[in-house]
Length: 97
Image 1: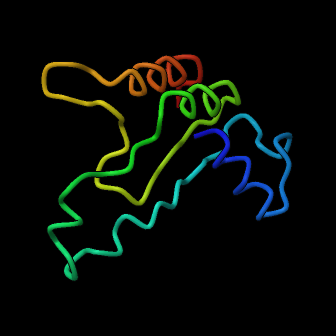
Image 2: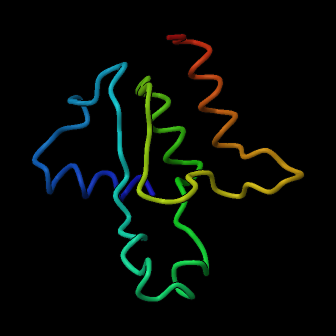
């Protein structure tokens, strides 16, 4: 959630204005901690970057996002594309490499 990003920024003593176009943002969820210790828990689900967060970082023209999860898109299914993927793709189209 956007509130989580704000809390992380406060812990890191950074301001929203510190996020510049072209920056990268990485989400640390800790979801990998049960790997090879509690595989049932590890395989039971995954944290995702929620749509409101995708919009927030896209509005800042962030060019790269990453996470310590095995997938970063919320709501992705084989038959339906993730809305977060669509928003990030639109941002990439505005700022091609």
